[in-house]
Image (cartoon, rainbow, N blue to C red):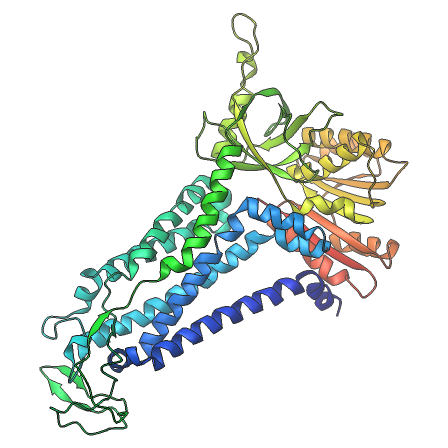
Length: 559
């Protein structure tokens, strides 16, 4: 019961919204399906292609609407505006305005599914174009009945060529978006995702002069009407007149409306309307990009840099015009490494008047870009000083932000549980430092901090900061911290007298049971920043331990 209640409490709105969006996509598909099934201008074409025509057009409409919406979660400035508007509602609404990346991924899966249906439908359409022709109006089928093959339809038409190109682009976007690819070779993910520009361009020309043809003169030739020069009788059903040279000829399946044809039917290409779906979202995205380019134009100098541990470096930047909130993150660019790459990092120290507008970031060497960056800001000891004994100059960087994060909400709960894995401690340190430096009113009364650390030097730095902040804030709130050391146990022996230090990994089940026992009838904010496996474990404990009176609200941050 607890797990189901917690699942509904934490994810209920998300699942409801997904259901609503799937319903919207279903309605769009069905309306398009019915339009091409019952529209008089498509009757002759439908007699050749059957229901596959309707399925292909319906799935195309679903692809269009999702490709239009999928850009909006990536418009960071728009999301920031929505987030500040949501502040007037409640904290749950703000949670979902931040976690738009999950919705972006969800839309991507819908596009893949709709694309698979669209491709399948057009395969059968190509087969029908090769085998079936209208007995009276052969120009409904644009292909020659003598030499038409599926190869000619696919590789000799604009829709066929562009369709194959879009399939390859979608596969590249999907494969490089997998989590293990993003984590190991982020550059591959980042650069390959720029292919969405080519995808959208190809989508806009995909239907140009395609083989699907609609009737243009409905007012002068109603499908099934009587031509005075022909001996046509009304028929209720389609009949196949026979095979001639392995070609199937189909009689009209429509019922006459007892009208006389004024002229023979005329057919033309079905217009490509993809641009109508994409123009507004693309315009918003371009405006968002232009605004960010202007905001990113100023270069900043790194004032200081120091090593936190063997693979984490702290940089300090003097920023006067950047207003941040504890828990937010910024994007960093170093032009000497790459002009295009921007990487997100959580803020360790928020720039305020108290600290002289100094922004501090911890950057962990966990990929090709971060490895190059740490080498540039922290060279080998032997070359820290040149021959004239002058300090080595740091590279210039550009900062883009701030960006909203679920870690901002810590101070809005009376009870907050903060769980970090290694460098994931940064958003929690930013809150502690901000509360310690600035005398601000906050609702928070209890902070339970749990940090899992493998490096002993990092453990020393974290311990020093947490102990200092907890001592300074002891008069206004209670901070209980536990640090779990998973490295060499020989180092741990020097700190066995401290109750807050433990070896091995924590038992989250025990932790949550203890918190639930001491914080009854409270809504508890649970904030996790670390590996995906740890986030999943904590999420499950939130679901299990949530009841009618004590609720655990799950927040996470992963990059």
